[in-house]
Length: 154
Image 1: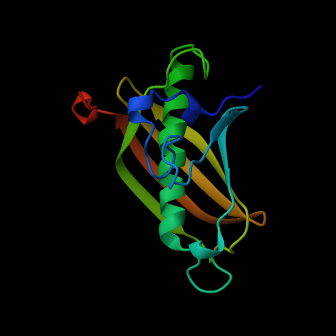
Image 2: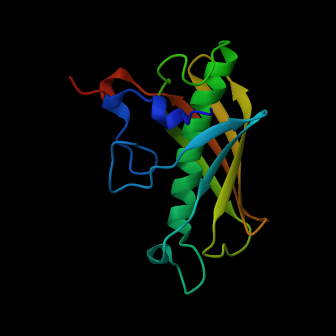
Image 3: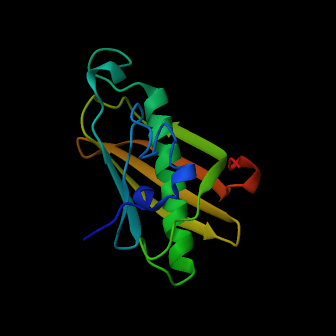
């Protein structure tokens, strides 16, 4: 059984609007390892509309951002010889995010694929592709860093 990386985040850092399992108002995306890449699937709701029939660009950026942070955690675990679910996931935050909108994204089920470009001790660089109706509609490039301890409560 595959485990989503977000389901292994420690409770004190599982509240993110995009990927936090403990945020009932958020997107609650789930990112999985499939082969050598990561995959997230998300179906926008009608209120995620930019103009009728098309997905709001801010949502696309948010999905790419949170897919990348989850991917960074997966790729970091793999670099250490660990598997998803074997230990609590390391929590990454975004240091830099670029999103290229290649064409309008229909309001349809979305699939995001991620691959590691670089994995270091505290930094992971992830490239993401977002597809709708089997067409590549957006790409992202993200630099993720391990979350500083100052962001944890208590």
